[in-house]
Image (cartoon, rainbow over the protein chains, first blue to last red):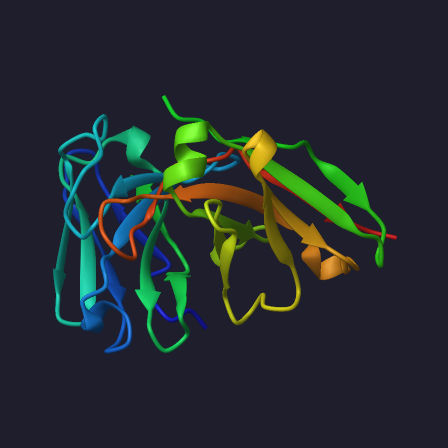
Length: 111
Length: 121
């Protein structure tokens, strides 16, 4: 049972907008700890696509965006492309565990 | 471009010991926490712990405290993850990654390529 809850899967047609939620609690996201999002293709290392809630590293397309509100955060992908099909993980810090925590991951499928 | 270079795949038997490595640049070694992340077959990411090479301070996830040891060798700017007695359930890919300095409790901005550890009798 992950401390951060993500939907197992989301899907969309090319060009559509999809969002992935990451629900935490008062000891992590609700405590104002930053949320980070990672993209992982099968057989490769994860790569950060959003850091510190809303920031995109250089090289990450601007169709990726992050937001947060209360004890939750979201990753949005607008103008979905076939190359976006991957697993996505959210991460934050949990003060009760004194540890970083990941969500269980969300599989994005491009129809 | 910053890179973290991890050691190669390992196949070990239960109860054996193991130490895997993560070679980093001098800049990363001096200014960043280095973390370790486990990914069991077909599963998600789990943060195990991290080390600050400057003073070898370590922090462990409660799930991994006492199960592994994280260390560094400053002379060769290398971080390590080690087990004293492996179990079959330690079979996984292990990633080292650099914690960003963007703000306190920052994320992992550079990742190693991963080390596959297989434990089987």
